[in-house]
Length: 148
Image 1 (cartoon, one colour):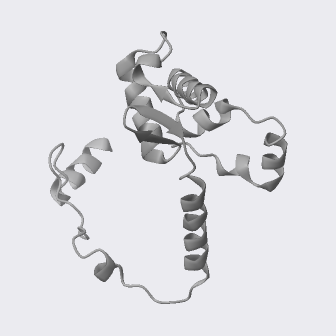
Image 2: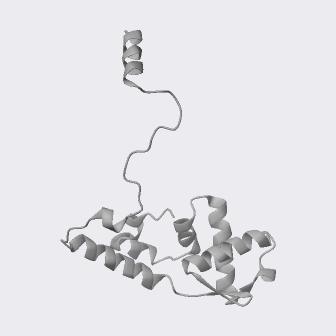
Image 3: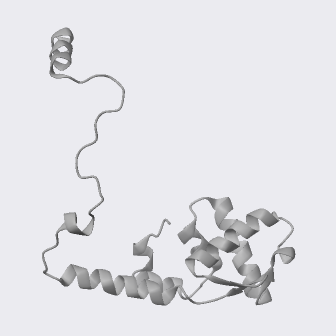
């Protein structure tokens, strides 16, 4: 998700709220223009119809592609999928607000944390080299001598 947070700080947000459009929403989730267009077209269709079934998808978007984008919108919380219809929902704003609150509380806390306890299964040692050129000490010295 290419969220450019500075575009949604207070002053830029006030300007954006004067002229809201689906393009800004789609560009948050997709960098690619075609993907953003398809996502936006489907969101706009759901908004216009109040609910959308796969058989009602615009003809210029393949049904399999539409299903993938609509399911993604359900996964991130923009749409709700009940039975065979997709509808607009608002499961998105409250969790993001809670994440921001949690991050701010973590920044302000002064407790000591032990990452080895929090991530007991994480690999903490450097991985062994798996291929490529050998880098032993003798090889490095020979390369230096040959470069001179």
